[in-house]
Image 1 (cartoon, helix red, strand yellow):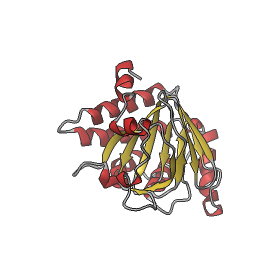
Image 2 (spheres, rainbow, N blue to C red; image 1 turned 120 degrees about the horizontal axis):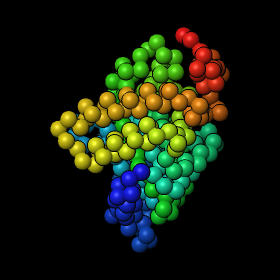
Image 3 (cartoon, one colour; image 1 turned 90 degrees about the vertical axis):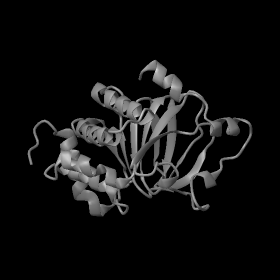
Length: 236
Protein backbone atom coordinates (compact mmCIF):
# COMPACT_ATOMS: atom_id res chain seq x y z
CA UNK A 1 0.00 0.00 0.00
CA UNK A 2 1.29 3.43 -0.98
CA UNK A 3 2.39 5.20 2.22
CA UNK A 4 0.71 8.51 1.32
CA UNK A 5 -2.56 6.73 0.53
CA UNK A 6 -2.45 4.80 3.80
CA UNK A 7 -1.74 8.00 5.71
CA UNK A 8 -4.69 9.72 4.04
CA UNK A 9 -7.08 6.89 4.86
CA UNK A 10 -5.76 6.74 8.46
CA UNK A 11 -6.90 10.27 9.26
CA UNK A 12 -9.65 10.60 11.84
CA UNK A 13 -13.13 11.12 10.44
CA UNK A 14 -15.66 13.41 12.11
CA UNK A 15 -17.53 10.32 13.33
CA UNK A 16 -14.38 8.85 14.86
CA UNK A 17 -13.52 12.10 16.62
CA UNK A 18 -17.01 12.20 18.12
CA UNK A 19 -16.55 8.64 19.37
CA UNK A 20 -13.19 9.51 20.91
CA UNK A 21 -14.89 12.43 22.63
CA UNK A 22 -17.22 9.98 24.35
CA UNK A 23 -20.16 9.93 21.96
CA UNK A 24 -22.14 6.72 21.22
CA UNK A 25 -22.47 4.87 17.92
CA UNK A 26 -25.40 6.47 16.12
CA UNK A 27 -27.11 3.54 14.42
CA UNK A 28 -29.60 5.92 12.80
CA UNK A 29 -26.75 7.18 10.60
CA UNK A 30 -26.67 3.69 9.07
CA UNK A 31 -30.20 2.29 9.24
CA UNK A 32 -33.87 3.30 9.45
CA UNK A 33 -34.61 1.39 12.65
CA UNK A 34 -32.97 -0.55 15.45
CA UNK A 35 -33.00 -3.79 13.43
CA UNK A 36 -29.72 -2.35 12.07
CA UNK A 37 -30.11 -3.19 8.38
CA UNK A 38 -27.45 -0.89 6.93
CA UNK A 39 -28.84 0.82 3.82
CA UNK A 40 -26.76 1.41 0.72
CA UNK A 41 -28.60 4.58 -0.32
CA UNK A 42 -27.18 6.33 2.75
CA UNK A 43 -23.68 5.96 1.31
CA UNK A 44 -23.76 5.32 -2.45
CA UNK A 45 -24.21 8.52 -4.49
CA UNK A 46 -27.14 8.76 -6.88
CA UNK A 47 -26.62 7.05 -10.27
CA UNK A 48 -23.74 4.97 -8.89
CA UNK A 49 -23.52 1.38 -7.67
CA UNK A 50 -20.26 1.39 -5.73
CA UNK A 51 -18.59 3.67 -3.22
CA UNK A 52 -15.75 3.61 -0.71
CA UNK A 53 -15.98 4.32 3.00
CA UNK A 54 -13.29 4.00 5.68
CA UNK A 55 -14.27 1.52 8.38
CA UNK A 56 -15.17 3.41 11.56
CA UNK A 57 -12.72 2.70 14.39
CA UNK A 58 -12.96 3.08 18.19
CA UNK A 59 -16.38 1.44 18.50
CA UNK A 60 -17.77 -2.10 18.40
CA UNK A 61 -20.47 -2.60 15.78
CA UNK A 62 -23.28 -4.81 17.13
CA UNK A 63 -24.87 -7.54 15.03
CA UNK A 64 -26.06 -5.95 11.78
CA UNK A 65 -26.91 -6.71 8.17
CA UNK A 66 -26.52 -4.86 4.86
CA UNK A 67 -28.82 -4.49 1.86
CA UNK A 68 -25.70 -4.52 -0.33
CA UNK A 69 -22.53 -6.54 -0.84
CA UNK A 70 -19.78 -5.36 1.49
CA UNK A 71 -16.13 -5.85 0.55
CA UNK A 72 -13.81 -5.06 3.44
CA UNK A 73 -10.13 -4.55 2.59
CA UNK A 74 -7.72 -4.33 5.53
CA UNK A 75 -4.93 -1.80 4.98
CA UNK A 76 -3.13 -2.21 8.32
CA UNK A 77 -3.75 -3.89 11.64
CA UNK A 78 -6.75 -6.20 11.89
CA UNK A 79 -10.51 -6.43 12.40
CA UNK A 80 -12.31 -9.24 14.20
CA UNK A 81 -15.68 -10.29 12.77
CA UNK A 82 -18.18 -12.67 14.33
CA UNK A 83 -20.78 -14.02 11.93
CA UNK A 84 -24.36 -14.93 12.88
CA UNK A 85 -23.23 -18.57 12.65
CA UNK A 86 -20.78 -17.99 15.51
CA UNK A 87 -17.73 -18.20 13.26
CA UNK A 88 -14.96 -15.68 13.96
CA UNK A 89 -12.77 -14.20 11.24
CA UNK A 90 -9.65 -12.17 12.02
CA UNK A 91 -9.01 -10.08 8.94
CA UNK A 92 -5.34 -9.08 8.78
CA UNK A 93 -3.50 -6.47 6.74
CA UNK A 94 -3.99 -6.74 2.95
CA UNK A 95 -6.68 -9.41 3.26
CA UNK A 96 -10.16 -9.26 1.79
CA UNK A 97 -13.55 -10.19 3.26
CA UNK A 98 -16.70 -10.29 1.12
CA UNK A 99 -19.98 -10.35 3.04
CA UNK A 100 -23.20 -11.20 1.26
CA UNK A 101 -26.41 -9.18 1.33
CA UNK A 102 -28.45 -9.53 4.52
CA UNK A 103 -25.93 -11.74 6.29
CA UNK A 104 -25.43 -10.66 9.90
CA UNK A 105 -22.12 -10.07 11.61
CA UNK A 106 -20.64 -7.94 14.35
CA UNK A 107 -17.24 -6.26 14.46
CA UNK A 108 -15.01 -5.73 17.47
CA UNK A 109 -13.73 -2.21 18.13
CA UNK A 110 -10.63 -1.21 16.16
CA UNK A 111 -7.70 0.88 17.36
CA UNK A 112 -6.00 3.75 15.56
CA UNK A 113 -3.65 1.49 13.58
CA UNK A 114 -6.46 -0.82 12.43
CA UNK A 115 -7.22 0.83 9.10
CA UNK A 116 -9.71 -0.68 6.65
CA UNK A 117 -11.95 0.47 3.82
CA UNK A 118 -15.38 -0.75 2.85
CA UNK A 119 -16.30 -1.12 -0.79
CA UNK A 120 -20.08 -0.75 -0.62
CA UNK A 121 -21.44 -2.47 -3.71
CA UNK A 122 -24.97 -2.99 -5.01
CA UNK A 123 -25.45 -6.57 -6.33
CA UNK A 124 -26.21 -5.47 -9.90
CA UNK A 125 -22.68 -4.09 -10.13
CA UNK A 126 -21.39 -7.67 -10.43
CA UNK A 127 -23.15 -8.38 -13.74
CA UNK A 128 -20.11 -7.39 -15.77
CA UNK A 129 -17.82 -9.45 -13.55
CA UNK A 130 -20.05 -12.49 -14.16
CA UNK A 131 -19.85 -11.86 -17.92
CA UNK A 132 -16.05 -11.70 -17.75
CA UNK A 133 -15.76 -14.91 -15.75
CA UNK A 134 -18.27 -16.88 -17.81
CA UNK A 135 -20.98 -19.27 -16.66
CA UNK A 136 -18.89 -22.27 -17.77
CA UNK A 137 -16.59 -21.67 -14.80
CA UNK A 138 -18.12 -23.51 -11.85
CA UNK A 139 -16.21 -21.53 -9.26
CA UNK A 140 -16.91 -18.20 -10.90
CA UNK A 141 -20.62 -18.92 -11.30
CA UNK A 142 -20.91 -20.04 -7.71
CA UNK A 143 -19.04 -17.04 -6.30
CA UNK A 144 -21.06 -14.46 -8.19
CA UNK A 145 -24.39 -16.23 -7.61
CA UNK A 146 -23.62 -16.39 -3.89
CA UNK A 147 -22.98 -12.66 -3.82
CA UNK A 148 -26.16 -11.80 -5.68
CA UNK A 149 -28.52 -14.22 -3.93
CA UNK A 150 -29.93 -12.97 -0.60
CA UNK A 151 -30.86 -16.59 0.25
CA UNK A 152 -27.29 -17.81 -0.20
CA UNK A 153 -26.05 -20.24 2.42
CA UNK A 154 -22.51 -18.87 2.08
CA UNK A 155 -22.44 -15.82 4.34
CA UNK A 156 -18.95 -14.69 3.42
CA UNK A 157 -15.85 -15.30 1.29
CA UNK A 158 -12.49 -14.69 2.96
CA UNK A 159 -9.36 -14.23 0.86
CA UNK A 160 -5.90 -14.36 2.45
CA UNK A 161 -4.23 -12.58 -0.44
CA UNK A 162 -1.66 -10.36 1.31
CA UNK A 163 1.14 -11.88 -0.79
CA UNK A 164 -0.67 -11.80 -4.15
CA UNK A 165 0.75 -8.65 -5.75
CA UNK A 166 -1.65 -8.37 -8.74
CA UNK A 167 -4.63 -8.39 -6.36
CA UNK A 168 -3.00 -5.79 -4.11
CA UNK A 169 -2.30 -3.54 -7.11
CA UNK A 170 -5.89 -3.86 -8.36
CA UNK A 171 -7.36 -3.00 -4.98
CA UNK A 172 -5.11 0.04 -4.62
CA UNK A 173 -6.11 1.19 -8.11
CA UNK A 174 -9.80 0.81 -7.24
CA UNK A 175 -9.31 2.88 -4.09
CA UNK A 176 -7.70 5.68 -6.11
CA UNK A 177 -10.54 5.54 -8.66
CA UNK A 178 -13.12 5.95 -5.89
CA UNK A 179 -11.25 8.70 -4.06
CA UNK A 180 -10.66 10.69 -7.25
CA UNK A 181 -13.71 9.97 -9.43
CA UNK A 182 -13.86 11.00 -13.06
CA UNK A 183 -16.39 10.79 -15.89
CA UNK A 184 -15.54 7.19 -16.78
CA UNK A 185 -14.91 6.05 -13.23
CA UNK A 186 -17.85 3.68 -12.86
CA UNK A 187 -16.98 1.87 -16.12
CA UNK A 188 -13.37 1.56 -15.02
CA UNK A 189 -14.48 0.19 -11.66
CA UNK A 190 -16.79 -2.38 -13.28
CA UNK A 191 -13.88 -3.63 -15.38
CA UNK A 192 -11.57 -3.57 -12.36
CA UNK A 193 -14.06 -5.60 -10.32
CA UNK A 194 -14.17 -8.19 -13.08
CA UNK A 195 -10.37 -8.38 -13.13
CA UNK A 196 -10.33 -8.67 -9.35
CA UNK A 197 -12.65 -11.68 -9.49
CA UNK A 198 -10.58 -13.27 -12.22
CA UNK A 199 -7.48 -12.95 -10.05
CA UNK A 200 -9.33 -14.30 -7.01
CA UNK A 201 -10.49 -17.28 -9.05
CA UNK A 202 -6.93 -17.87 -10.22
CA UNK A 203 -5.81 -18.10 -6.59
CA UNK A 204 -8.30 -20.53 -5.00
CA UNK A 205 -5.71 -21.71 -2.48
CA UNK A 206 -6.13 -18.36 -0.72
CA UNK A 207 -9.91 -18.62 -0.37
CA UNK A 208 -11.65 -19.64 2.84
CA UNK A 209 -15.34 -20.61 2.99
CA UNK A 210 -17.80 -20.70 5.85
CA UNK A 211 -17.64 -23.96 7.80
CA UNK A 212 -21.42 -23.91 8.30
CA UNK A 213 -22.59 -24.43 4.73
CA UNK A 214 -25.96 -26.21 4.64
CA UNK A 215 -26.18 -29.77 3.34
CA UNK A 216 -28.10 -28.52 0.31
CA UNK A 217 -24.88 -26.93 -0.91
CA UNK A 218 -22.62 -29.90 -0.20
CA UNK A 219 -22.09 -30.72 -3.89
CA UNK A 220 -21.12 -27.15 -4.69
CA UNK A 221 -18.69 -27.10 -1.79
CA UNK A 222 -17.15 -30.37 -2.97
CA UNK A 223 -16.64 -28.80 -6.39
CA UNK A 224 -15.07 -25.73 -4.80
CA UNK A 225 -12.73 -27.89 -2.75
CA UNK A 226 -11.84 -29.92 -5.83
CA UNK A 227 -10.97 -26.72 -7.67
CA UNK A 228 -9.08 -25.36 -4.69
CA UNK A 229 -6.79 -28.38 -4.29
CA UNK A 230 -6.54 -29.59 -7.91
CA UNK A 231 -6.69 -26.25 -9.70
CA UNK A 232 -3.80 -26.99 -12.06
CA UNK A 233 -5.16 -30.30 -13.36
CA UNK A 234 -8.95 -30.16 -13.09
CA UNK A 235 -11.03 -29.83 -16.28
CA UNK A 236 -14.69 -28.91 -16.83
